[in-house]
Length: 157
Image (tube, rainbow, N blue to C red; front, top):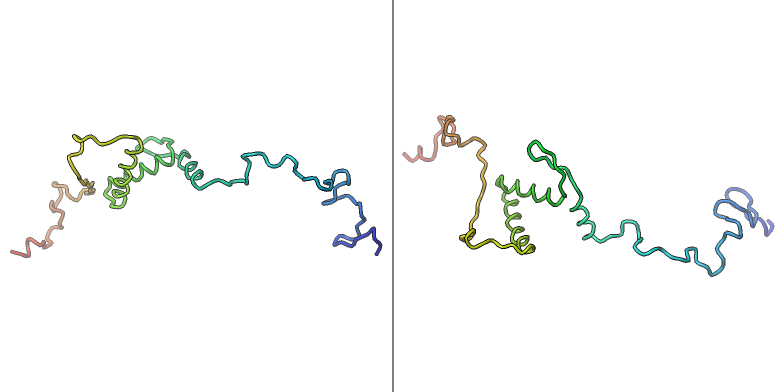
């Protein structure tokens, strides 16, 4: 082989040949010169290189559609989560009630709102218990028991 030819997978190649990965000499980088003399512009870091806090805030602000009765509204994701948590707490779910009551004083303190003394006589726990029609006085077995079933009070007699 001669010095001006090199063997490659595509066949013989001449020094100074132009093609893929071999730009003309005048367009090649000069010795000691950077390929990007101005550098990357500020604020244009790696694509998606953000902190977890920035991502969380962006997602919390993202709008979502929420159905309230017959209406569909667009609210932020954070508001939708709080509404969902409130609804679960109102249905009587223990964890949702605990989370909601734990978050409320922190949120009130953050906005500078406090519960007035007249509004809060002392510590009180309120549970919303759905009955799903079980305690309907107009239904057979008004006390929730099936008709003909023996209850604890019947056994003690």
